[in-house]
Image (cartoon, rainbow, N blue to C red):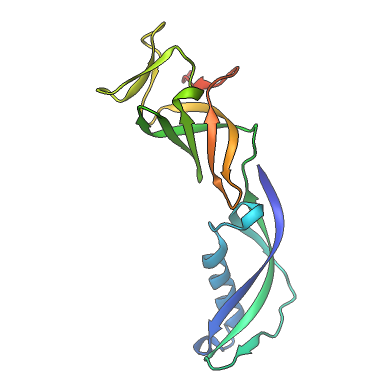
Length: 174
């Protein structure tokens, strides 16, 4: 799920950047530091949408030629929750299940969470349906998955999914 979140970040900048372009350097450093990073309970920062107009004066760091600026900004963050459904691409298959990705979200689906009709073929590295052999999924297949567990609350980008349920599984192109 996506959220618009207000966050703060301390940005450290060296004295060589103390010039009229300091705000430009701070913004550039902020974007490079936070975009794509994990914001803890808020999920991953996808993009910074707005930077607060009020800037503090910064604080000199004693013993170093740099200063710290606390910057408040708004960002779009992404976090997955139990019960959400995602379309994802399979990246790796093993005899115990498969891994897939939906953007930055890494999903593992255990063999126990794949319908019983599907069997893993070690030679071809595919799961195929014994009742309908034409129905199979392999690396790069598009698959619809429901999240059943977030592995680690500190890193909500690693989740466990299932294919058991209505409208889940292999997605066919029209």
